[in-house]
Each structure stands twice: as structure tokens, then as C-alpha cells.
Length: 387
Image (cartoon, rainbow, N blue to C red; front, side, top):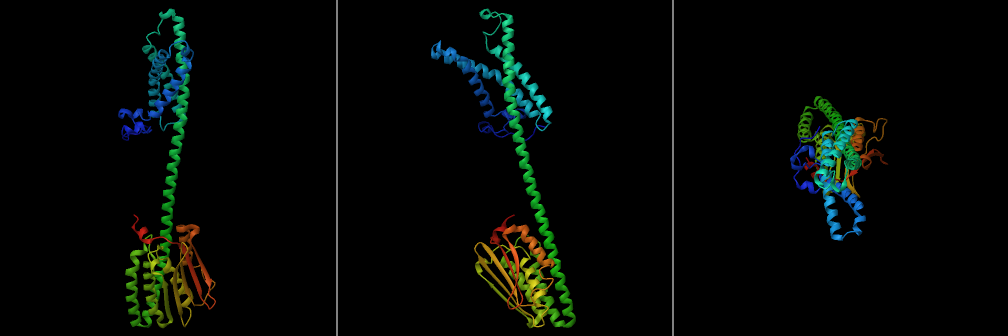
């Protein structure tokens, strides 16, 4: 079906815009300057080729005038065919190849007849009886011109058909690629949201269970922990569903979480944070630092009666942001690195950064584990401002 969208401004004709519709007529869309120029070029080649012999037998000025008149006659005679073929091309856009070829073939036949009729009307000397032109010779000449128009029109229409097919194929391929990119982006976002949704209840359920146990043992400490947990949730919940965050925000969230854990562990937990101020606005996926800190507490320090120290160090390494979460806890166990939090962290890194980011767990010589998170440095302020 022919598109009903509004045609571009007439200046698009000079730029050979294939969407330009002359005089606002939709069925003439594609009648561009380039297409008209191609027909004029073909007519010029034909006229010069057939007028070469006369160039040496007549004055040059007279020969040039005759060539110009002959060229004008040929070009005007081919215009009806060009129009008919263009209309057929537009009317069959989006239809089957067989139907389109049939319509274009009929358009070429009609155009060759229109060419001959126009040529006879424009050439006053071309009629029976002029210069002893018999009816038989006239009919033969008419048939010859019709066949020639049919041949040339068929060749140029075939060229038009393949060019149009290639353009439509390229446009369809482009649309397919864009749709695939949109689908990949939607799948990536859905995957990230699913992974993040798994992390959130994992942290919250563990923390609430700890609050309940502590509240049963020591009401004063339980009340304090509920207050600190409330403070943490007010800071953390608004950002849990965000797709981007900054190191500053994630450190504040981790610090609030550690404040909650300090109430539970009392003097058994020490915290050290070392970070360069210029890195605070670096982009960091939400809850990723929180997950690693929680893992260090749960699997490293909590099982030890004496507790220990957790150290968060952030530095720049070339074009990467390097975050180290180290503890002096019990070290690797059978389940270390296989929990939901670490598995989802690795999956989120692979989805967001591919091979540019990674998470490595190393055993510390003095005991405990260091989780090293490496990812490209990006400005989190710019990402958060992007719609």
C-alpha cells in the first residue's frame, strides 16, 4: 500500500529525496531529479550516436540545433513512460514480487505506446506522404520506434526494480537490527531487575531475622538496632529500584548497614574506609557494594567469636575503578563465592560491562578474604541525569 505520510518540501526534489512527491501527488513519489537525469542522459547518448554522421555534412551550428531539437523530442516522448512506470512502482510497493513485475511490465508496454504517440505528435515531418514516406514504411518505422522504446524502457525499469528492491531490503534489515537492539536492551533491563530483586530480599530477610534475635536477647540493643535499621531503610529503599548509582551513595548505604551490624556485634566489628574524594561520583551499580559488604560480614566475621575488621578501599587503576572489601575472618569455606549475592553480582557485571569488569575473591595471608571488584570508571552524575 502507498504511504499516506506528507511529502517533503519541494527542495527535496533537488536532493533526489526518494520520498519527495511532486505536486503533492503520492503516486508520483520517487520521481526524483536523479531519475529524470538518468533518462535525459540515456536520450543524449542515443541522439548523439545517431547524429554523428550528420555532424560532418552540415554546419556545426545547424547540426547542434538539430541535435537539440531531436534530444528535446526524445526526452519529452519518454516522459510519459517515466511517469507511468513510477506510478506502477508506487502502487505495487509492498506487494509480491510477481505482482510487481507484472505491473511494471504492463507499465513499460503502455509507456512505449505513449512514447510513440508523443513522438508522432511532436515530430510534424513524421507522417505518411512526407518525403515519399509510404504507409508501409511509416508503419515499419512506428513499430521500430515502439520496440526500441519497449527495449530501453524495459532495461531502465529492470534497473529501477532492482534498485528499489535493494533499498527496501536495506531498510527492512535496518528495522530488524533496530528492533533487535530494542529487544536486547529490554531483556538486559529485565535481567538486571530480576537479579537485583533477588538481592534485595536476601539482604532484608537476613537483617530482619537478626533484629528479631537481638530484640529477644537485649531489648535496649534491639530498639537501637530497629532505629538504625529504620534509618538505613529510609536511605536505601529509594535507590533499590534505580538502575544507576554512585560510589558516594553506595558507600553511605554500606555505612548505614555496618552501623546496624555494629549494634548486633557490639565491639566485635571494626570498620575502615579508604577512598579518594575524586572517585566518589564514579558510577556504581546499586546494591553491588552492599552485597559484598554483607557477604564479608555473614561468611567472614560473623562466625568468629571475636569478630574482626572489615576494610573498604577504593582506588583508581588506569581507567578502572578498583574496590577492595577485605576482612580478617575465617577465610574460604565450602560455600564461599557460591551464594546468591556473589552469583548475582557476577551476573550483573557480565550484563552491564561484559569482559570489562570482574569480581575476584582472594584469601588473605593473615586470614580472611579480599573481594576485589574492578569495573570501568564512569561519571555517575552523567548517568543519573540521562532519561
